[in-house]
Length: 127
Image (cartoon, rainbow, N blue to C red; front, side, top):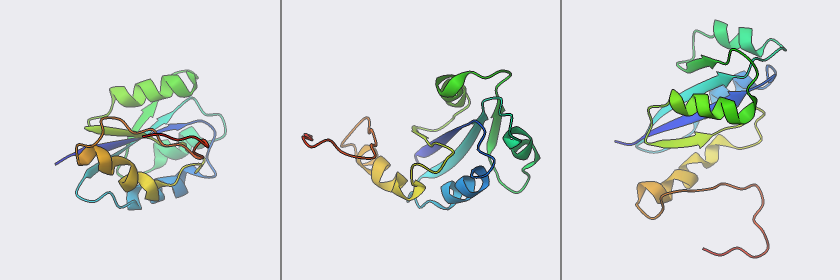
């Protein structure tokens, strides 16, 4: 069975993070296990403390010791992931977790090795 790691780099998103985690947990990804990794990038708005206190969500919590930026947070998330597949999910709900199944399906079927999701496709799109 495949396993999907959803890495959420988090910086000052205390108003959306709990809603996002609920949506990620509830996302239907078929017969694939799911691991959620929240990487706090030294938030200063209370996000860090909120994540530390979470008890009712089964998530991996990673806390950067200083602000490393989104790239550094993603690297730390990858280091802590155990999945066969990885999705990077912004904490501000910019991307919809309901789309995960569509994104990973071509990989599961062996039709692709890498999928790049995009909010808007360019006018000239080729496969």
